[in-house]
Image (cartoon, rainbow, N blue to C red; front, side, top):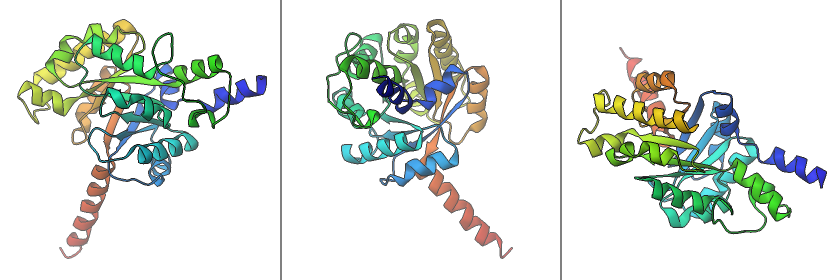
Length: 268
């Protein structure tokens, strides 16, 4: 039993949780295009701490998501999944994710719903799926497995509206919520200010969310600033500790465009 416990703890290391506990900044990439497991190794080689498979804005299947998450577990980076809705949480976590990103959370009740779906009893209502990839498919005592998986699994809510920002304190007070990721683009759309990253309302939203996180011992994540690294850096300096950098598609397009420009510039 002691060997199992040692292996269990080692097998369920969550790099994101470890870095957040040390107050270090986490770098994450979004997977929305590449369906092969190679993306997990590419992300790790590039130095990312985490990737999240975006099932809200992609046509990825559960099988594809699961394969990428399992590959990420094997190379030692933390796999999250942005879920398309509450009904999919159980299967996504059973498939290999070490946490969920819950989009469009508006209030504490919705946050509690996601916690219930993501956590085992007594905190939640996640049901027993048997041998999980997180545990290398080993059969372990239920109490031990539940505790280890719950400790490693994160619930990240997204603030993407004025209503969510107004309810920041109540949402971050929910037990089981670990972090909030502000979806800056959707937030700006809700404000009627699409693309206006420098608008004072953006700063106010981050200040309010960060205050709620600090009050309740939670973490703030920055999203939507792929084209504005200066603003991402600003909010990191203020206290954000997780940066959602860009999508695999964004990285590919940027590298391709840079190479084409390089070739065209050769004739100048």
